[in-house]
Image (cartoon, rainbow, N blue to C red; front, side, top):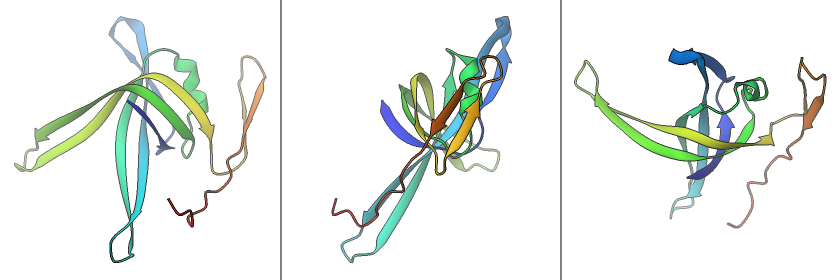
Length: 129
């Protein structure tokens, strides 16, 4: 599945058995629409993501960054201790594309001293579609 959204917090790298590393982060997907009465509504869906390929990418995955994700999405459902139904979406990420953030940011890698600059123009809410 391919989707894009905004990171809800900085990515975290964890070590799992066998000294493998996984980068974990959460993405918020916003969907806006108008009802028949003309009222604007917004729905936010959260997806917990796991990226196993390159843990070094975590330093670029900061809160507010807009990303495009390609991977396998699965739904999980369970009943909590209060007998309430709970559900979540998770994604095993194959590809990440950094699209930008809400403001200009300069990211500098410590090992290469290279700088990456990203800028995103604010979206226009008055589009007819």
